[in-house]
Image (cartoon, rainbow, N blue to C red; front, top):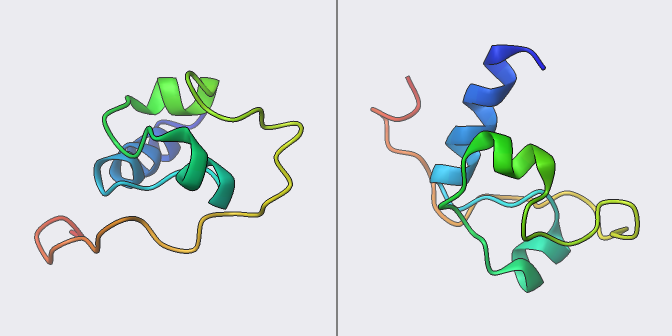
Length: 68
C-alpha cells in the first residue's frame, strides 16, 4: 500500500475513526490501533459481511495543527 495511505489511515485512527458504521458501533476499537492493524482488520468486524457503509465522520474533528 502507498505510504501516504498509511499516514491517512493512522490519522483517522488517531481521531477515533473506524472503517465502517458497524465497526464504529460494534468494534469498540475507536482509535488506539496502528494503520497496519486497521488495514488487517485486527479486532474488527468482518469486512466481507459488513454492508453498513463507510463511517461518515471520525469521533472528533482534527485541530488546525493536525490538519496540516
